[in-house]
Length: 414
Image (cartoon, rainbow, N blue to C red; front, side, top):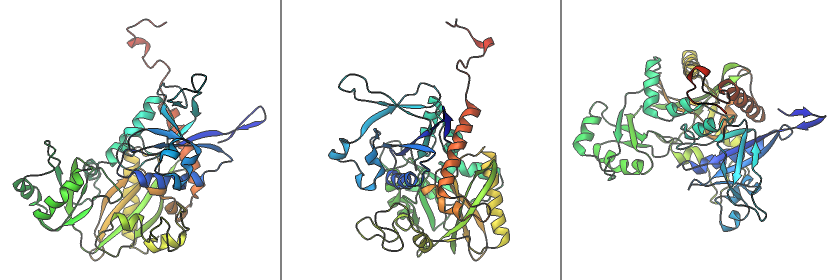
């Protein structure tokens, strides 16, 4: 990606955006710190851009270190609050919000936005739409695919239309009065077709936040307020006996849709919850006891092996279905980025269903690509691929400077 100009190497500048106004804010930071460590700095200059829970944007070198989060008073003195220039020039500009001693501060220019957001207001198409408006190349899935796939109900409609198996479900909406309390009779009608036990979870969140197994209407009522605090809808599905999960990432590698390794998460309980996914063995001080390096955001191979099986031995037909269904969905949505697709199955009956799609998986699912059976991709190369795709997608969709066709112009041009 580095270009030569007058015998000098000019590197592309990548702004890495992360954090955000999401319940998954902290997970986004961990993913971003992993990415910042993995970049090929011989090809790219990197600018960290952190979006705080209140929506303020900051940049500064201290944002590369985990120990500096969340920003305290001293940390705030070492960052610059910025905003995005949405004028649709090629490339991006960050505008410092405070003026310098001698007037306006020079904008911070960058070429590509690398988006590392999980959950609301980042993974769901909102931030993607902002960069589309500003005509800035950005990594990952486009606005349409992000919005569809971060809504579990809409995803089911799409999967059903593609003849990809999904579990039956019902949806509970947050009451308009803000009480979080749903009428018991209404719940009984909604849950009658499903029966119990069920899995209840937010419609728009990931990372297993808010997921619960419920065995009665009373338990549904008890769990809904916690979901409604962070999401406006909950979805319920039948509990799958003999539960087993399979995850796989999909993306375009050298212009062709490719599939990563398949992982089978390990679990010691009926449900893989947030703590099992993200804090499998915490030492109480932010480090990892088994396999990892204390305070390092990148898990070691030993740590990964404790929590998942990579390329497990599964029936040939099941593996073929996982790969073909994932490829088909990605192709239909004009897929970009490297989403992770999650399946659930019954280990005794062999049944399997597509469950959820993560437009921006934690850590970009780099370990899945490094373990791919065909054409494994190292983390650093994966980031370079995403940047190249972002530039290509931006060029493919960019409109003329004046987007109004000659025959549609009703006003005089200067």
